[in-house]
Image (cartoon, rainbow, N blue to C red):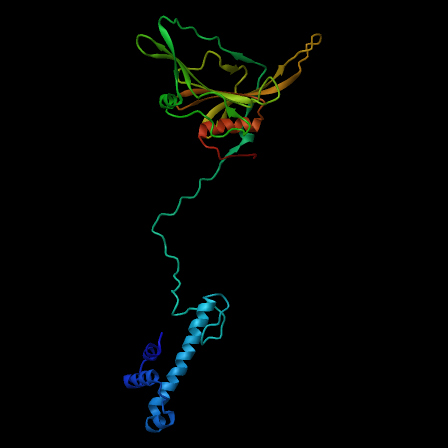
Length: 304
Protein backbone atom coordinates (compact mmCIF):
# COMPACT_ATOMS: atom_id res chain seq x y z
CA UNK A 1 0.00 0.00 0.00
CA UNK A 2 1.54 3.42 -1.04
CA UNK A 3 1.00 6.69 0.75
CA UNK A 4 -1.83 7.80 -1.49
CA UNK A 5 -3.87 4.66 -1.00
CA UNK A 6 -3.28 4.68 2.72
CA UNK A 7 -4.48 8.27 3.06
CA UNK A 8 -7.53 7.62 0.89
CA UNK A 9 -8.44 4.56 2.94
CA UNK A 10 -8.78 6.70 6.06
CA UNK A 11 -11.75 8.59 4.61
CA UNK A 12 -12.89 12.21 5.19
CA UNK A 13 -9.68 13.81 3.82
CA UNK A 14 -9.82 16.46 1.13
CA UNK A 15 -8.33 15.31 -2.18
CA UNK A 16 -6.36 18.60 -2.39
CA UNK A 17 -4.26 17.74 0.66
CA UNK A 18 -3.52 14.28 -0.72
CA UNK A 19 -2.43 15.77 -4.06
CA UNK A 20 -0.25 18.44 -2.38
CA UNK A 21 1.46 15.86 -0.23
CA UNK A 22 2.20 13.63 -3.22
CA UNK A 23 3.58 16.56 -5.35
CA UNK A 24 5.77 17.83 -2.56
CA UNK A 25 7.18 14.40 -1.93
CA UNK A 26 7.86 13.82 -5.63
CA UNK A 27 9.74 17.17 -6.09
CA UNK A 28 11.81 16.70 -2.96
CA UNK A 29 10.45 19.89 -1.48
CA UNK A 30 10.13 20.39 2.24
CA UNK A 31 6.58 21.13 3.31
CA UNK A 32 6.38 24.39 5.21
CA UNK A 33 4.74 22.93 8.28
CA UNK A 34 4.63 26.16 10.33
CA UNK A 35 3.40 28.29 7.50
CA UNK A 36 0.75 25.86 6.48
CA UNK A 37 -0.33 25.53 10.08
CA UNK A 38 -0.89 29.23 10.32
CA UNK A 39 -3.00 29.26 7.18
CA UNK A 40 -4.86 25.92 7.57
CA UNK A 41 -4.46 24.78 11.13
CA UNK A 42 -7.66 22.66 11.11
CA UNK A 43 -6.81 20.65 8.00
CA UNK A 44 -3.22 19.91 8.98
CA UNK A 45 -4.40 18.71 12.41
CA UNK A 46 -6.77 16.27 10.74
CA UNK A 47 -4.00 14.95 8.49
CA UNK A 48 -1.62 14.40 11.43
CA UNK A 49 -4.32 12.60 13.41
CA UNK A 50 -5.04 10.47 10.39
CA UNK A 51 -1.39 9.47 10.11
CA UNK A 52 -1.30 8.38 13.74
CA UNK A 53 -4.53 6.41 13.22
CA UNK A 54 -3.07 4.71 10.14
CA UNK A 55 0.06 3.74 12.06
CA UNK A 56 -2.04 2.29 14.90
CA UNK A 57 -4.25 0.30 12.53
CA UNK A 58 -1.22 -1.03 10.62
CA UNK A 59 0.51 -2.14 13.83
CA UNK A 60 -2.62 -4.00 15.02
CA UNK A 61 -3.13 -5.55 11.57
CA UNK A 62 0.42 -6.95 11.26
CA UNK A 63 0.49 -8.07 14.89
CA UNK A 64 -2.72 -10.04 14.35
CA UNK A 65 -1.24 -11.69 11.28
CA UNK A 66 1.79 -12.83 13.28
CA UNK A 67 -0.28 -14.18 16.16
CA UNK A 68 -3.24 -15.60 14.26
CA UNK A 69 -6.54 -16.31 15.96
CA UNK A 70 -5.03 -18.28 18.81
CA UNK A 71 -6.39 -18.92 22.26
CA UNK A 72 -5.36 -16.41 24.92
CA UNK A 73 -5.21 -13.33 22.65
CA UNK A 74 -6.75 -10.20 24.06
CA UNK A 75 -9.77 -8.83 22.30
CA UNK A 76 -9.48 -5.13 21.47
CA UNK A 77 -11.63 -3.05 23.74
CA UNK A 78 -12.54 -5.92 26.05
CA UNK A 79 -9.42 -6.69 28.06
CA UNK A 80 -10.59 -10.32 28.20
CA UNK A 81 -8.59 -13.29 26.82
CA UNK A 82 -10.17 -15.12 23.94
CA UNK A 83 -9.83 -15.89 20.24
CA UNK A 84 -9.18 -12.93 17.95
CA UNK A 85 -12.00 -12.14 15.55
CA UNK A 86 -10.03 -10.03 13.08
CA UNK A 87 -11.93 -8.35 10.24
CA UNK A 88 -8.94 -9.10 8.02
CA UNK A 89 -9.11 -12.86 8.52
CA UNK A 90 -11.68 -15.25 7.10
CA UNK A 91 -14.55 -15.51 9.58
CA UNK A 92 -14.87 -18.80 11.39
CA UNK A 93 -17.95 -20.76 10.41
CA UNK A 94 -19.91 -23.06 12.65
CA UNK A 95 -20.25 -26.60 11.25
CA UNK A 96 -23.33 -26.87 9.10
CA UNK A 97 -25.85 -29.62 9.61
CA UNK A 98 -25.45 -32.31 6.98
CA UNK A 99 -28.35 -33.17 4.73
CA UNK A 100 -27.11 -36.77 4.53
CA UNK A 101 -29.03 -39.23 6.70
CA UNK A 102 -27.24 -40.28 9.85
CA UNK A 103 -25.54 -43.68 9.73
CA UNK A 104 -27.68 -46.33 11.41
CA UNK A 105 -26.50 -47.57 14.77
CA UNK A 106 -24.67 -50.86 14.71
CA UNK A 107 -27.00 -53.72 15.70
CA UNK A 108 -26.61 -54.95 19.22
CA UNK A 109 -24.99 -58.34 19.73
CA UNK A 110 -27.34 -61.32 20.00
CA UNK A 111 -27.53 -62.71 23.52
CA UNK A 112 -27.90 -66.44 24.11
CA UNK A 113 -28.37 -67.88 27.58
CA UNK A 114 -26.31 -71.07 27.67
CA UNK A 115 -27.98 -72.07 30.93
CA UNK A 116 -31.21 -72.45 28.91
CA UNK A 117 -29.51 -74.92 26.54
CA UNK A 118 -30.14 -78.53 27.42
CA UNK A 119 -27.46 -81.06 26.45
CA UNK A 120 -28.75 -84.62 26.16
CA UNK A 121 -26.10 -87.05 27.40
CA UNK A 122 -25.64 -89.97 25.02
CA UNK A 123 -24.54 -93.52 25.66
CA UNK A 124 -23.41 -93.90 22.06
CA UNK A 125 -23.91 -92.88 18.45
CA UNK A 126 -25.34 -94.62 15.41
CA UNK A 127 -25.15 -93.95 11.69
CA UNK A 128 -27.29 -94.87 8.71
CA UNK A 129 -26.50 -97.41 6.08
CA UNK A 130 -25.61 -95.73 2.82
CA UNK A 131 -28.50 -95.90 0.31
CA UNK A 132 -27.87 -97.55 -3.00
CA UNK A 133 -29.00 -96.22 -6.39
CA UNK A 134 -28.61 -98.23 -9.58
CA UNK A 135 -26.09 -96.32 -11.73
CA UNK A 136 -27.99 -97.41 -14.85
CA UNK A 137 -30.97 -95.34 -13.67
CA UNK A 138 -29.34 -92.63 -11.57
CA UNK A 139 -26.28 -90.43 -11.86
CA UNK A 140 -24.28 -88.63 -9.17
CA UNK A 141 -23.70 -84.91 -9.51
CA UNK A 142 -21.52 -82.42 -7.72
CA UNK A 143 -22.88 -78.87 -7.33
CA UNK A 144 -20.71 -75.87 -6.59
CA UNK A 145 -21.31 -73.39 -3.77
CA UNK A 146 -23.38 -70.99 -5.92
CA UNK A 147 -25.70 -73.79 -7.05
CA UNK A 148 -25.99 -75.00 -3.45
CA UNK A 149 -27.09 -71.59 -2.18
CA UNK A 150 -29.63 -71.28 -4.99
CA UNK A 151 -30.94 -74.78 -4.24
CA UNK A 152 -31.37 -74.20 -0.51
CA UNK A 153 -32.14 -70.50 -0.69
CA UNK A 154 -29.55 -69.78 2.00
CA UNK A 155 -26.09 -70.66 3.24
CA UNK A 156 -25.39 -73.16 6.01
CA UNK A 157 -21.81 -72.02 6.57
CA UNK A 158 -21.37 -70.87 10.18
CA UNK A 159 -20.99 -67.11 10.58
CA UNK A 160 -18.73 -67.78 13.58
CA UNK A 161 -16.21 -70.50 14.26
CA UNK A 162 -13.14 -70.87 16.52
CA UNK A 163 -10.15 -69.09 15.04
CA UNK A 164 -8.00 -72.23 14.78
CA UNK A 165 -10.48 -74.03 12.52
CA UNK A 166 -10.33 -73.61 8.75
CA UNK A 167 -12.64 -74.94 5.99
CA UNK A 168 -11.28 -78.07 4.32
CA UNK A 169 -14.24 -78.70 2.00
CA UNK A 170 -15.30 -76.71 -1.05
CA UNK A 171 -18.88 -76.16 0.12
CA UNK A 172 -20.32 -78.25 -2.70
CA UNK A 173 -23.27 -80.62 -2.59
CA UNK A 174 -23.48 -84.25 -3.65
CA UNK A 175 -26.73 -85.11 -5.39
CA UNK A 176 -28.16 -88.23 -6.99
CA UNK A 177 -30.40 -87.52 -9.98
CA UNK A 178 -32.82 -89.73 -11.93
CA UNK A 179 -31.35 -90.01 -15.41
CA UNK A 180 -34.72 -90.03 -17.15
CA UNK A 181 -36.72 -87.42 -15.25
CA UNK A 182 -33.89 -85.28 -13.81
CA UNK A 183 -35.48 -85.54 -10.35
CA UNK A 184 -33.13 -85.22 -7.40
CA UNK A 185 -33.64 -88.26 -5.18
CA UNK A 186 -30.83 -87.69 -2.72
CA UNK A 187 -28.87 -84.61 -1.62
CA UNK A 188 -26.41 -83.88 1.14
CA UNK A 189 -24.27 -80.83 1.73
CA UNK A 190 -21.04 -81.31 3.70
CA UNK A 191 -19.14 -78.40 5.23
CA UNK A 192 -16.11 -79.42 7.27
CA UNK A 193 -13.89 -77.19 9.43
CA UNK A 194 -10.82 -78.60 11.14
CA UNK A 195 -7.48 -77.82 12.76
CA UNK A 196 -5.17 -79.92 10.60
CA UNK A 197 -2.24 -79.16 12.91
CA UNK A 198 -3.98 -80.59 15.97
CA UNK A 199 -1.46 -83.02 17.54
CA UNK A 200 -3.70 -86.08 17.56
CA UNK A 201 -5.29 -88.54 15.18
CA UNK A 202 -8.75 -87.26 16.16
CA UNK A 203 -8.56 -83.66 14.93
CA UNK A 204 -10.37 -80.75 16.50
CA UNK A 205 -13.20 -79.55 14.25
CA UNK A 206 -16.82 -79.94 13.17
CA UNK A 207 -18.96 -80.86 10.15
CA UNK A 208 -22.26 -79.37 9.00
CA UNK A 209 -24.57 -81.64 6.98
CA UNK A 210 -27.76 -80.31 5.35
CA UNK A 211 -30.39 -81.95 3.16
CA UNK A 212 -33.80 -81.03 1.73
CA UNK A 213 -34.72 -84.68 1.21
CA UNK A 214 -33.80 -86.09 4.62
CA UNK A 215 -30.47 -86.92 6.17
CA UNK A 216 -29.04 -90.30 5.41
CA UNK A 217 -26.04 -92.21 4.28
CA UNK A 218 -23.16 -91.30 6.64
CA UNK A 219 -24.95 -89.04 9.09
CA UNK A 220 -24.46 -89.68 12.82
CA UNK A 221 -27.52 -89.79 15.03
CA UNK A 222 -28.08 -89.46 18.74
CA UNK A 223 -29.67 -92.39 20.55
CA UNK A 224 -31.20 -90.87 23.68
CA UNK A 225 -32.27 -87.39 22.60
CA UNK A 226 -35.53 -86.24 24.12
CA UNK A 227 -35.32 -82.62 25.20
CA UNK A 228 -35.03 -79.66 22.84
CA UNK A 229 -33.62 -76.15 23.29
CA UNK A 230 -34.77 -72.86 21.73
CA UNK A 231 -32.05 -71.07 19.76
CA UNK A 232 -33.38 -67.81 18.32
CA UNK A 233 -36.76 -69.39 17.60
CA UNK A 234 -35.43 -72.71 16.24
CA UNK A 235 -35.89 -75.93 18.18
CA UNK A 236 -32.56 -77.74 18.47
CA UNK A 237 -31.72 -81.14 19.93
CA UNK A 238 -28.24 -81.00 21.49
CA UNK A 239 -26.34 -84.12 22.47
CA UNK A 240 -22.99 -85.02 24.00
CA UNK A 241 -20.99 -88.15 24.57
CA UNK A 242 -17.41 -89.11 25.31
CA UNK A 243 -15.67 -91.45 22.90
CA UNK A 244 -12.47 -93.32 23.38
CA UNK A 245 -9.51 -93.38 21.06
CA UNK A 246 -6.49 -95.65 20.66
CA UNK A 247 -4.10 -97.10 20.77
CA UNK A 248 -5.69 -99.52 23.21
CA UNK A 249 -3.75 -101.48 25.76
CA UNK A 250 -3.44 -105.06 24.41
CA UNK A 251 -4.18 -106.63 27.77
CA UNK A 252 -6.52 -104.25 29.61
CA UNK A 253 -8.05 -102.79 26.44
CA UNK A 254 -7.93 -99.38 28.08
CA UNK A 255 -7.96 -96.55 25.54
CA UNK A 256 -5.24 -93.97 25.18
CA UNK A 257 -7.80 -91.34 26.10
CA UNK A 258 -11.27 -89.88 25.66
CA UNK A 259 -12.59 -86.93 23.68
CA UNK A 260 -15.84 -84.97 23.63
CA UNK A 261 -18.32 -85.25 20.79
CA UNK A 262 -21.18 -82.74 20.50
CA UNK A 263 -24.11 -83.04 18.13
CA UNK A 264 -27.06 -80.87 17.14
CA UNK A 265 -30.08 -81.67 14.97
CA UNK A 266 -32.60 -79.07 13.76
CA UNK A 267 -34.72 -78.00 10.81
CA UNK A 268 -33.99 -74.67 9.15
CA UNK A 269 -35.75 -73.12 6.13
CA UNK A 270 -37.07 -76.45 4.90
CA UNK A 271 -33.79 -78.33 5.30
CA UNK A 272 -32.71 -80.83 7.89
CA UNK A 273 -29.37 -79.92 9.46
CA UNK A 274 -26.95 -81.91 11.58
CA UNK A 275 -23.77 -80.59 13.19
CA UNK A 276 -21.16 -82.90 14.73
CA UNK A 277 -18.04 -81.66 16.50
CA UNK A 278 -14.94 -83.29 17.95
CA UNK A 279 -12.93 -81.73 20.78
CA UNK A 280 -14.87 -78.44 20.87
CA UNK A 281 -16.00 -77.04 24.19
CA UNK A 282 -19.72 -76.85 24.93
CA UNK A 283 -19.70 -73.04 24.61
CA UNK A 284 -17.87 -73.15 21.26
CA UNK A 285 -20.28 -75.71 19.86
CA UNK A 286 -23.40 -73.86 20.97
CA UNK A 287 -22.08 -70.64 19.43
CA UNK A 288 -21.32 -72.38 16.11
CA UNK A 289 -24.87 -73.73 15.92
CA UNK A 290 -26.35 -70.37 16.90
CA UNK A 291 -24.34 -68.63 14.16
CA UNK A 292 -25.65 -71.06 11.52
CA UNK A 293 -29.23 -70.35 12.58
CA UNK A 294 -28.90 -66.57 12.92
CA UNK A 295 -26.37 -65.93 10.17
CA UNK A 296 -24.50 -63.59 12.53
CA UNK A 297 -21.14 -63.78 14.24
CA UNK A 298 -21.82 -61.20 16.99
CA UNK A 299 -23.31 -63.61 19.52
CA UNK A 300 -22.61 -63.19 23.22
CA UNK A 301 -23.14 -66.18 25.49
CA UNK A 302 -24.51 -65.27 28.90
CA UNK A 303 -25.54 -67.21 31.99
CA UNK A 304 -28.74 -66.49 33.83
